[in-house]
Length: 216
Image (cartoon, rainbow, N blue to C red; front, side, top):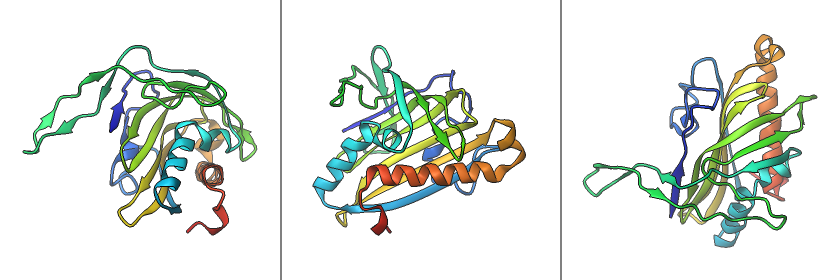
């Protein structure tokens, strides 16, 4: 099991990790617009494994019409997230050396602290940004990560991508995000932020599931 977090003051928002909050939709970070969608991808271990592999190789972004470049893994060791012992007492995070993996074209897999440059268009406007992996999870039945904006984006905030293999044997893909408008058009017209997010969610699903039309 791997569960790693990375915090860096250079992200351009304060609520680092808020995409994981259970009450995100009710109490989003100040001035931000929350969003959440879940889709059933299928069932079984093989489906989970293939979806997890796609997720960690940046497929939702890359096959969703966005280019991912300048992938810079964090240097040195990273820290596991805070855990709990049998009595519920918090256990301090431990420092581990990262095992770096690469996809077929040599691009580093998702890892905590990795910084990437994303370019593309969403809703006719630029979607260029520098993003950082602030959370990475690799568990037996859950794999995913969260990206935070570092700079250059029309919005400021975080988005989380998770694939879960449930006890029912179903495999689900969940994306959660919160966006605070930065660019002037988005600040003046909040519906642009919501439209941008809807389009991104649709792209992510089409990228990770060839069964988009039958997803429920």
